[in-house]
Length: 242
Image (tube, rainbow, N blue to C red; front, top):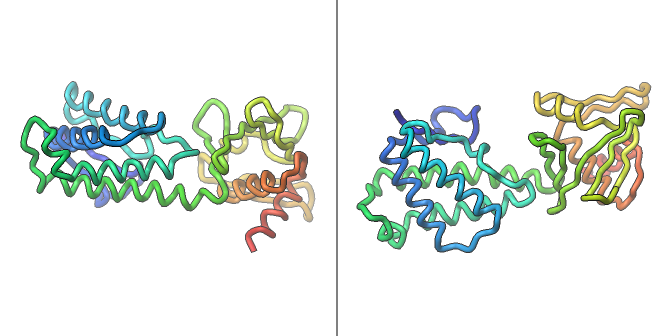
């Protein structure tokens, strides 16, 4: 069986990296060896631990070590820097210095094209992070919904009897967004690629996709206000985009 590395589950077949089991071992050995020359943050150590785990999986159950890049343990707040780290690792993996550290001769004509394609996939991740950076990023895939903006992470909460969304940073209530959505609504809509809607009358209709709602949250936080209505926040976000 072969191992396949993709950007995500919707990536077209011609963008897949398809490797033999032996080739997968060499590919991962080179990345792991190359990473040793760099200082790493805790998040970058987790990324390398993920690759080491895939190496172990390939040793135990060949043909099952493939993965999607969006499955890796990225941190929303440092994704751009961490992707840059992996690009440096992929480049270092193609040097004579890394090759000399292996206890065998690697078939560079086979492995180097895989490393180059891996770098292309990582650049896609980096590009997406740079595109989303101006307006932050929602994390919908954890026990609590969070929003990361300008390297700060905010927890999103609601109250069953109040139509408000509360933005907390740790124990500090940073802002109350009135007439907004609760986190469950955000997860349900955005995870399905849909929009969230508000209808408090014809002059108060609002509809947001995930990127649009991030723009609203960014506008709220940049305003410095600790209390704002969703309608006013939407107008502020629209003015900022002009």
